[in-house]
Each structure stands twice: as C-alpha cells, then as structure tokens.
Length: 162
Image 1 (cartoon, rainbow, N blue to C red):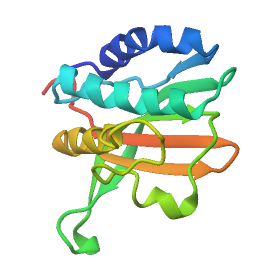
Image 2: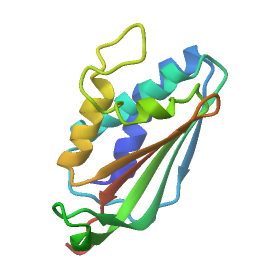
Image 3: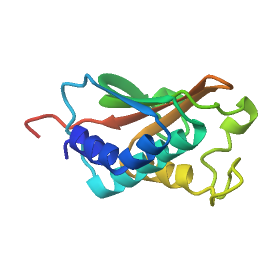
C-alpha cells in the first residue's frame, strides 16, 4: 500500500475536528518512497487515534504537522542489541502544539487503559502502538510540557520492484 494515500484519507476523516478547534494542519510529505506492506484500514485507525490525541492536547488555535521522510532505522531483533537490523524505512512524524506530556507519564502512554484525560478509555494510543507493531514498525514519542508532542513512526518500506 502507499502510505501517503492512507495519511491523506486519515486527514480527511479528522478535518471536522480540526475546523471546530481552529487547528491548522501542515502537510510535509517528503518521502519519495512510501510503499509499505500493510493494511490501510488498520493504519488509518492508528493514525486517527494519534491525530485525535493531538487535537485533544490542543485547546484551540494550534497546529498539527504531519510529515514523511525516507530514512534507515535500526530495529531490535530479540533481546540482544548486537542483533539489531537496519532497514530502509518511511518515517512519519506527527507534531502538535498541544500541552505536552509529563516525562514521568511518557513510559505509560501506550499502556492499555492509561489516560491522563477526564474522558476516554485510554485505549487510543495502546491500539495505535499495537497496529504499528503488527506492521513491523516502531513508534517513538518526545514531548515538552507547554510546547507539544512529536510522534515518530517508522515503517519498513518495500522496494518498488518487490
């Protein structure tokens, strides 16, 4: 599947929520190769969950940036770091200007039922994490309180002639 098509579909699904909170959306697709092995519907669900969290983190009048680039990522292979494998990837970055996540909570955000919100089940990021892992990918998060959060998702790319 072409990841850019899936991202575009996702962004259309969240357009109303963006408009309601006056959140600016910035697309920055730079990856030349976006062919990945995966299920578009599952990845759409993961991306919707990540973007809805970004929208929730922004009170109003903020911005979400969704970008892609090609890179190489070292994936763990078992418990031995010496056996990690470098693979050509597409990196998708979702950046928001929301309230950020406290450092002591970052380790918990992918746990099922964990939430720092007054509403919600705490399943959105857990589900997104599981879907990314099912696609042999990795998800990483960086956050600064009062400034926002960055999610980096790495998915192995397929060669065009595969």
